[in-house]
Amino acid sequence: MNILITNDDGILAPGLSALANCTEDLGRLFIVAPETTQSAAAHSITLTAPLICAKVQLPSGKSGYSVAGRPADCVKLAMVELLPSMLDGEGRPDMVLSGINAGSNIGINVLYSGTVAAAIEAAFFKVPAVAFSLCIKDKIDFDYAGRVARQVLNRLMGHHVMKPGVAINVNIPPVECGWPKGIRVVPQSTQCGSNIFDRRLDPRGRLYFWLTGETGIEAERGTDLAAIAEDYVSVTPLMFDLTNREEMGELKKMVED
Image 1 (cartoon, helix red, strand yellow):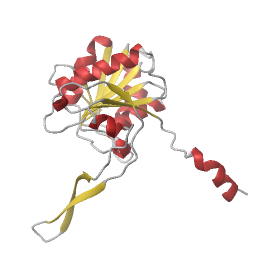
Image 2 (tube, helix red, strand yellow):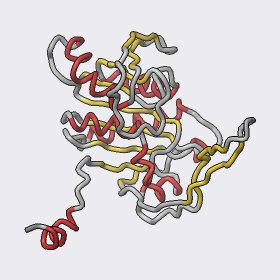
Image 3 (cartoon, one colour):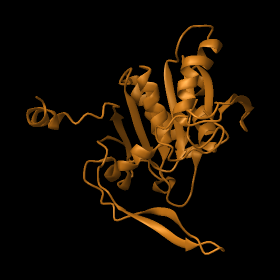
Image 4 (cartoon, helix red, strand yellow):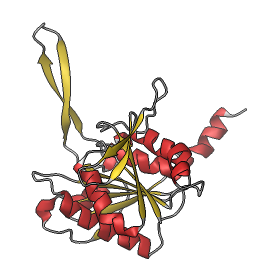
C-alpha cells in the first residue's frame, strides 16, 4: 500500500512524525508537507509564487519533501508531479493521511482547517483520505494521539468505509481524558461562538488586533463538539459539494426564466 502523509503544521511538526510512526507498517510512506506552519490556511492554493520543493530529513530519521506552499498545494503537487515519478508511473497513492494536527478541527473551524483541506484535496483526486487532529486542554501528547489515530484507522480500514472521493475528519479528545471512551460517528456542529480579538497599540500608536479565540460555543448533542466534550473520538465524513440542495427547488422557481 502506498500512503501519502501531509499536514498543515509543517514538515518538521511532531504530529506528522507521530502519524508516520504509527502507520509505517501499513506500506510505503511518502511524506509531502508544507515547509512552514500553515494553520488556518483552509483550502487556499499558491498562484503567485513558485512551489519550491526540497528533500528534508525528519527528526525521526524518515525523509520527505517540503513544499513552500499550502497543504492543498502539497497534495496537488504530490498527486500530479512527485508521486508519479516516485512510483514509476504506477499512479496515485492508495490513501492520504493528514495530521496529526496540534489542536481540534471541529465545528465550523473545519472550514478554516488546512489539515482537513489536505484530505478534501485528496478526495478531489478520488483517493480515500483521513484528517487527524488532537484536541488540546493543557498537555500535548502525540504518542497518545498516534496510538488513538492508529486504532481509529484500523477500524476504518477493517470495515472498508474509506471510499474514493470521501474525506473523513477524525478528532481525538485531550490526553487528560486518559483514553477515549470510544468512537462516535457524528455530524459537524454548526454552532457559532463569539470571536474574541485582543486590541492593542504598537509603539508607534498604530492599532492592531490578535484573534485570540472563541467563547460561548455550545456543544449540540450528537455533534463532533459534543463527542469531544464527552471524551469520545469524533469521526465525521465530509464532502466538497457545497450546494444547498434544500434551497434549489424554491430558488429555481423564483429566479429562473
